[in-house]
Length: 185
Image (cartoon, rainbow, N blue to C red; front, side, top):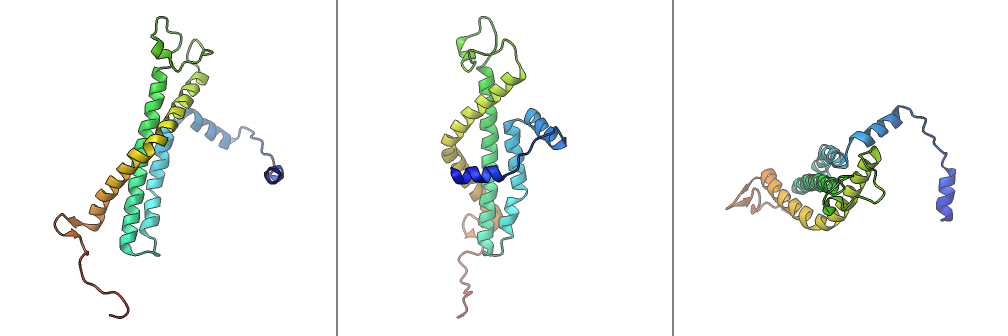
């Protein structure tokens, strides 16, 4: 603790003065939901990471293609599941955190806290989003291994067939050829 305290104390304090950067961050916080945020991250990752794998000159061509296919599959599977699960749990929380409805079923107020306002406010909307994200994180911990892993494996296999060109009877193009690339040949 002493080391981290020393480091933190050496960092100069920064006060936000409501400048343009702070306004942009505030706008994103108000207008971009967590599913949309995950979509933005996924799209930007898809536009950059596969190319890093594809142009890695430290490995052979087949390894580059496999790595690129796996990266694309992981990004696509993770983005689709992340957006779906986040959005689904936020909708679920909104459905079961109704406000002030007389005669509403008890289940419709399952996530409504006792100190909830009588009408929808910005703070209560943020509560619904936060509760939905909390539930989504729990679900994603469980589904990450099962759904995302299986989806990634399936998509990787589909992409590898496209990248390497396969024939169901002959296998991957280039396999089975007796090319000796060693120095002794």
